[in-house]
Length: 251
Image 1 (tube, rainbow, N blue to C red):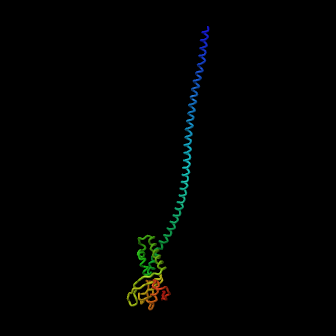
Image 2: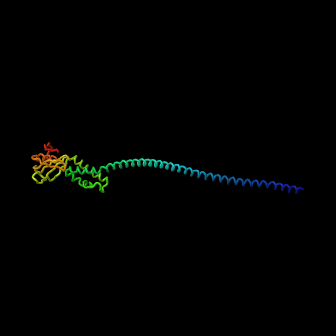
Image 3: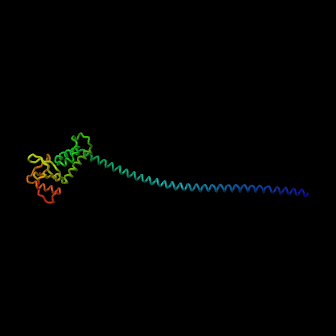
């Protein structure tokens, strides 16, 4: 009877231990899953922190690049506005120059004719100086290869040289025909375009010069040689500065 009881007790104890073992295994498995889950969460959080830092750096870089592009666009807009203003100004200037060119083109023939007429009254030293410009004046204004700008440049160049000559005193050595038909070497002192004095080396032949319709006239003045010679010597510096009484003739 006792043996039967012990066997039954052992069987009961065995029945009680089996559920406890299953609970331990389940708990161990659950703990393993929890640890694994925590590791995954930790890794995911670490990866997210790294991605977040990269995204923030990218955001900062992109914001800086966006600001640079905005500044560049503003500069381009300002440049475009300035270019538009310059283009408008140049177009207006072109219209003004075109209108002025039309006026000049309509009067260039008249200007050239007037200049050619005035050249006849220029003294020879001035004519020699502007000969290259004189040769460029068109013989036939209606049939010339010169541009409008070149023709205007010729006219302006001639008048500029004439104005320069007129504002200075010029001394030159020339050959002059005297009253007895002989040609002598003289010194000539031009007072701009208004008149001149001439005298030979001995003071024997002397006179004045002035522009006329067909060129300059050079009348001889008897008895004026010494004074005119003194005038030229003072100008050259071989005589002291002094007042010199010389004849004058205006026509």
